Image: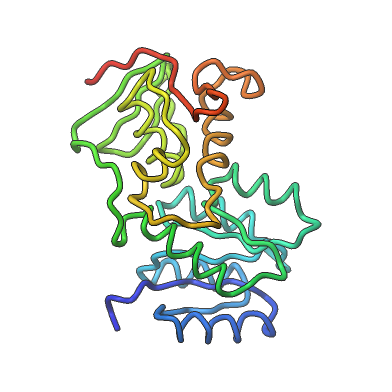
Length: 239
């Protein structure tokens, strides 16, 4: 039992929460299911949680606020559950560091597929790109500290990165000025099996650009190579 990934499911709708928790348990996960953010904070403090499935729209503290708290507190991956009408909230959630989102109504099988992909990316059975604990990479006024898993700007201010963003940026700084296709980046960052649901690379590139580019709409650091993929257009110094 103890080697099964432990999920925290946060959704105020009992009609969704209880059947989904039962389905996830039947498919090999341990599940702690709660109906509000306050209880979720207590469970996060008291349990070793591997991934959070989090509804955005909840009374009291909403899912976006809780997502921010989770990201500021550590590296636990987050999948958002969102309604189709909540496009702005989905974008904000991804910018706050959520690793993926699933639209309501959703297929539980699709949710499990996404959970497994993100757990592999986070290191639970994956073959992610790893760097020496003492390695740092300086580029374009930034320093990526692999040992601390932090990104620091020219003023010494740390910029938070999700697990997926960190793995992607590490892949790019490890291969500067090389064109890496989406499939290559997925393989490098996740060691993944082919997955038809995975849109993580484009989402994470967009979020990284918002953090490291002076103008994310006209990027000159993380460049798109049409028909090819992405490249880090900068000289990188290993420290």
